[in-house]
Length: 132
Image (tube, rainbow, N blue to C red; front, side, top):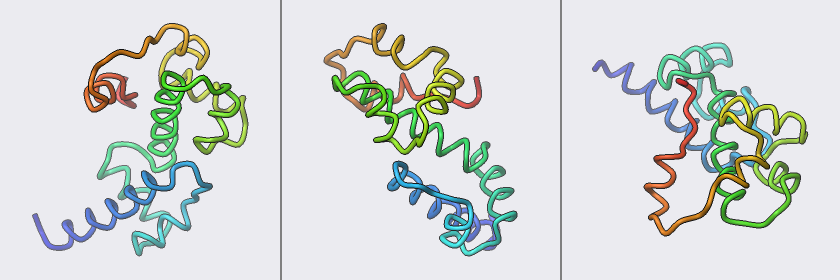
């Protein structure tokens, strides 16, 4: 691997780590591109080439993943969870959740029963995938 590719990968990892840490906060492409020290267009292209999905889709999937956990582990309202994970609209949250998980947040909560399985296994088994 060339030094340039390695530096590019590190920059994309810095941006992805920032998204993982602050997924519930409003994040935009200009801020993430600044973290990676590249232009906005270059950031989007390189992020997709590196991780297989756009930054926006990654962030949505990360937020839905956290929402899935909150739906199972807490009794909070779906609306509260929607805002807690960083969505600004219940409609957008519900539509995105259904696209990624395949069912509504309420149906997911009713169907899923928390078990005594280590959380690392549960997260790996239930992690939403953008690859179908």
